[in-house]
Length: 219
Image (cartoon, rainbow, N blue to C red; front, side, top):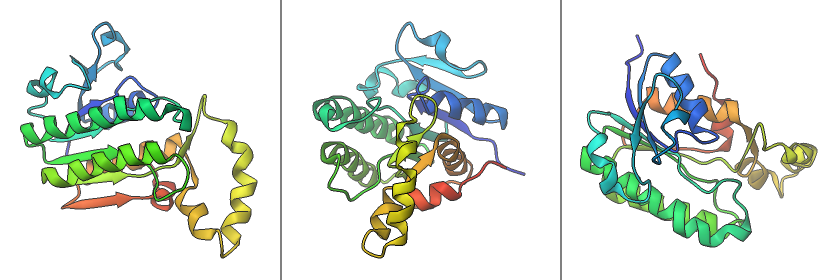
């Protein structure tokens, strides 16, 4: 029988977070979701809303216990090279705050959605996420790092036009590795990968890259 988890989620009202929370609740897990004041009603029914500032661990760390799993999903919506300053102002401090809050609560497992790397594209985004990864390693928390590149789904459909290009690149030896590392994944695959990470905690560090995300499925 699958162990039931008590999960703390930041970014729980976002693109991935709301879908993940719904799936976790449907599988019998308990969920607390960090939200800004006034957004409590956006949390999926059945989850407990925790009001706080994602950039400041002190505003919510007392509400993390007794959760055994922490999922960090806060980030700038629709990342692009033009949002470099926002990555430093939101993605980086929120990630560090999540790590600090989880470490303070001594959670058993931390799940972090990072970004595929290395790449010559989106350097500021990758740098911010990589710094959070380093903070996570330094914390000593057991963790899973999931590294998608672009997640396809409602409101995120324009890259579907690139699928034929990716297929060609994956056939060519000179571009095969980068095409697979920076490939496209679906929102359903991402949710499946996140659920797997929650239900199967890492014993140390686990990196889940695009090929592994694509193989994820909900059972």
